[in-house]
Structure formats: structure tokens, C-alpha cells
Length: 397
Image (tube, rainbow, N blue to C red):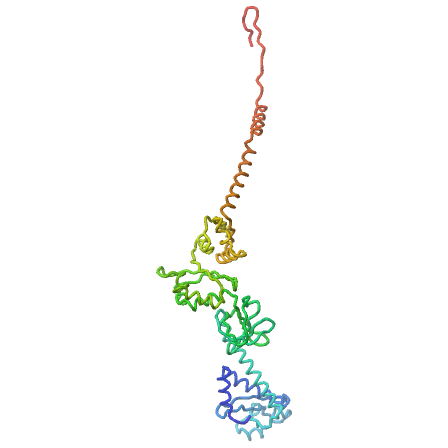
């Protein structure tokens, strides 16, 4: 309680980045807690920080009365006027207490409260700093592994790179530098928790933004990006300037820009696709380098059937279906790929079925039955035998 605290407060504010008012409030709360513990909460106390002398002063408030009943909370009018001659009965009189009267235990309590308040303020400051940085790419230093999760030092705070957000076959050692995407920031009981990711498509988008000035300036827009981390990725780009080629801007001179992104992603293959509002054309581009023969679209179901040459089928599907799977995610449509020969076989099968159905409806047996039915429906004509009489005249009918 003795000594100028202004220097200490300024140093803590500078080192911890805590707001000065929050720290002063923590000091006042700590001293008040110590004073209440000392006097067992029997008195009405308040603590205020004095900027001029750099000390926290504690004041005891008592009510001025004619006759004292509770000596801890009341004071006689005559005794009160010795402190303040203008005081009247019913007024609340505040008197500063001697700080030296606090015990050693009370001072220790004050220290603990200060540490707790400083820690809470520091956690709040970290949370406020990072909560608006979701979607950014940050650089950190690997500190340790905890059950497969990676603890990364970001400077002011430690972040978590969970095992599920790590790229397969990527290994890190202590003190290695790692670049990751901030996917989530949340406040937990242990303080702010910053979740990083190396598998999020946002990492790919952020890396291209940092490498391609046209994207950062808004001339080229990334419409969508999909990944199978550590293996392959596809990114769709569109140019808002007819003089700027979006794919060329992302590739860079001799592939320098895209190569920097590939290097950061540890060799992940990246396909850059020109975006178009026509889903058929977009699908054809998304399946590159495979060539497409025909496309049949079902707009209602958002599905399409794509026919490719026989020698392009494996290339269009990709290893374990990777190429077509990424293309479907990129355009957000269902894709069914067939080879030319398979499509022709299905067309022939459909034509045979159609012919069989036509033959069943127009077969000779069916025609005979229809004719027979028609004949039975016609009434047979009445036949009258006519005989000539002796004179050769026909009788009257």
C-alpha cells in the first residue's frame, strides 16, 4: 500500500496490453476485498485510486446520528462535526482509513485478486483481438504436441491446431514455423481458444490473395475453392476486367505465383478454373484436363450427365474418383460421367426396348384379334329366298 503505483500500472499496461482503467478497477477491487476481509464485512467501505499520489485509498462511510446504536456504521453528531463542521444528522460521512492497519493476510488476498483481475483482463484482451480475425492466415511457432493436437505460439496467445485440421503426412517439430488459417475463436472456462486449420479451403483462398495483387485489389474474384488436403485442389476465378486473364494472373510469370502457394501447401496440386455462369461450360472446365464430348443437364435436380471419349474416362474420373468429386463440389452439381461406348450401348439398349414395345403394340396377332373383334361387332345381313310364280312374275315383297 505504500509507494507510487503509477509506474507499476504503466508498466503492466505496456507489457500486457491491458486497458489502464481496467487495471485500476482491479486494484480498487483487490484493496476493497482485503479491507472487507480484515474487518469481516462489518463496515461500509469504498476504495478509490488517487492518481496524484499513486495509492489506493480506502474510505469508511458512517451515518451521522444523535444516538449511536451500531458503532461500525453510525457516528455521533458531535464526533462527526470534529471531522466536518457542516455535517448534519442523517448525512453519510466518509473517513479515510490508515492502510497500515491491514494485516499481512489481507495484503496477500489483495495480491491474489489483482493477479486474477489482470489475468481475466488479459484473456479478454486476447479474445477481443482475435475474434474479428477469423478467416485470416497467421504465422506461428510450434511449441508442443498434446494428444496429437499441435500447440502454436502466435505471440500474444497460444492457438490450437487440432489433429483433424492437420494435413496428412505433414509433420512438425518443436520451434518449426507454421502458417495456418484461423477457423474459430471462442471463449472457454480456461480463456480464449483459437482454433487453427491447415485443411480449410479458406487457407487456399488467403494464400492466393497474398500472392496475387489482382485478387487483393478486387480485379480478380475467387468464386469458389475446394480441396482434398495434401493431394489436390480446384479454384474457380473470374475477372472483372476484360483485359485481365484471371487464370494467368493466378499462375503468374512462369508459374511463380501458383508455385509459391503449392510450396506452402507442401506440394498440393492446384487446378485453376475460369468461372462461367453456364453450368455446362463450367463443368467442362472443372473436369480439365479431360476433354468432354456432350453434356446433358437436368436443371431441376441440378444434375448433369457428361459424356467423354473412351480414352478420356480415367482422366476425367481421376485417381479414386478425385477429379470428378472435386469438380462436383466446385460447381455444386451432381455429375455422372460416362464414356462414349457406354453411352452408345445404353442408347442402343433403349432403342431396342422401344422397338420391342412398338412391336408388342403392332404385332400381326394383335392386328388379327382387333379385326376379329371388329367383324363380330358388324351385324350379319338378312337373306330372303325369292321364288318365281308360274307367270314368271315376282311376288310382292
